[in-house]
View (spheres, rainbow, N blue to C red):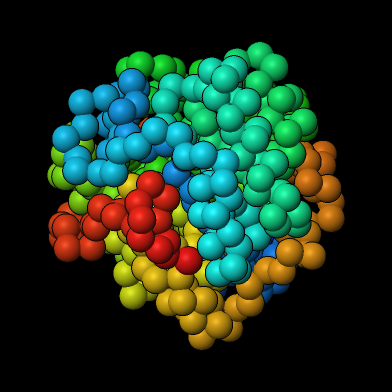
Length: 384
């Protein structure tokens, strides 16, 4: 297929595909799926070999968020029966993080619900980072605390944080349909705050919220322009009690096409398979490892993932290997920072018109959505 040959060549050169080419990946047929995966896999292996980076989430504060993000079970007005608790103490968070590190995680992601941290919250998280680093000096720590104010990213960096996550989630044109209590521009500004402070920026998207193909391409191109080091790809987990509980738009095949498109547009960044993989990819998760070079181990913020041992078995059985703590994730030319000039966007002006969101409606697999009842905020052992 000429399209795939072109995309592989561009990916190996770190050249941005056109919007038309990215859209075409999303509209390929299921009959061509393995060819699409194989092509994107060549780009993935060029920059990351067969390494898979493991990341582990610790939910520092769960529920009672004042924001109205429609996809989130912690949102204002959520009726989801999730765990709700205030800030974990530093030693509690460190203990939770240690479980993930023992399971093979190279990065621990510290997440807290809310619009953004107060200065007191930054102090609290700084102490938590110190406790984690004291116990596991080599582990990477990524903070995800919402919108940052001036100087907060610098304080987190000084406390030992390595990265900051703040996702764009969806296209700028449809952002107001998902969230009304803050703006797309607010999210972009926070990612830039993190980059300006010398933190490794992590920013991605959520697929499956009813968006069009053009929306998906728009947000991935926006991410490429923003140039984060890590791009987590989440697939909506339709949790009962949230406005998007009825959105079951993804098939395993479509999820793989989305991941392939992200890899072609962002060839040399850490593409992370994040929330919802078990729900939407199901038995096809191993194929996704040919597209991504990073996954979350164990559970998510408010829902459960598959067992940590099953993740490790999947990686080994698919012929991949867990990335060690002593290995640098990003290719040498990125240097842990931004793209070289070879990554500059092309001048191609292709159509931005909306495309159908995918092939047919997917069946609702509510049996695969389980609210988290273990780990942080409970007396039960975590899944790692």
